[in-house]
Each structure stands twice: as C-alpha cells, then as structure tokens.
Amino acid sequence: MCVIATVANGASSLPAEEGLASVYSTKFNGKITASGERYDDKLYTAAHRTLLFGAVVKVTNLDNGKSVRVRINDRGPHVRGRIIDLSSSAAAALGMTKGVARARIEVLSESGRAGAKGPSRP
Image 1 (cartoon, rainbow, N blue to C red):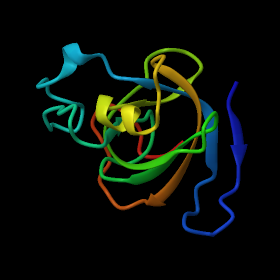
Image 2: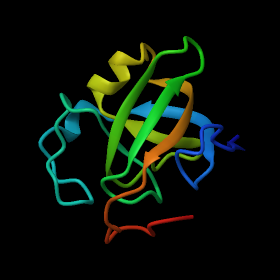
Image 3: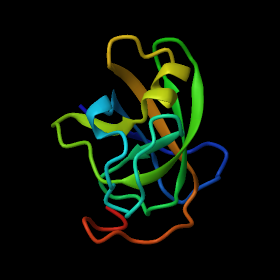
Image 4: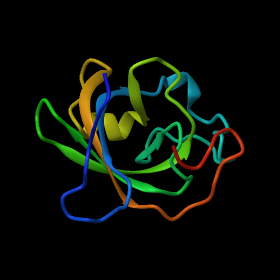
C-alpha cells in the first residue's frame, strides 16, 4: 500500500510517498542504468518509477528513523508495492537488514532530466 503525504517544510511541490523500499541486487553492479550511468553500489543512488533523473530524495526508514539522501538515476522498482530501489550502500546506511523496509521518500531537489524509460512525473 502506498500512502501520500505532503512535505511539511515546503521543499518540493511533490508529495512525500510512504511504502516499501528495497535494495538493488548486487548482480546489477557495473550495469548501465536507465539514465545511462553505470550502477555503483558504493554510491547513494536509487531507482524510482517517475522522478526525474538527478532528483535528490530523502529516504527515511520508518522502522528505525534513519535517513539518507539519494540521487535518482534509474527506473524501478519493478515489484508491485515497492516505491524505491536503493543502492546497497544507501540501504546499509538505513539499517535495512532484510532487503525491504517501510520507508518515506521526500523530494529535496527536483532538478534533473526526464528519462527515456519512463515519465518524469506521475
């Protein structure tokens, strides 16, 4: 289930999202993402279905309160019910030990470019 909430600080015109965050498989390390970049599991990057490539989002693990900032550089997740796929380093910083966690994402910067594999906005 995905819950939409507004961003209290007004940092973005897009609403926050709550749902499940997941972790990229390590098999994707070094592969080309939808934005044309190589996926590097050491960087704080993520996949989202509709946000612009280059957008920066704050991801908060709702189970432990830990947060990280990630840059969107890919499309996904491709599993129903998930709202974002995180690089393994970003997921580790969030304390995601099971590969999936309840999370909130808030857009901090909407700058970026639309991708060839998906719309730029919902």
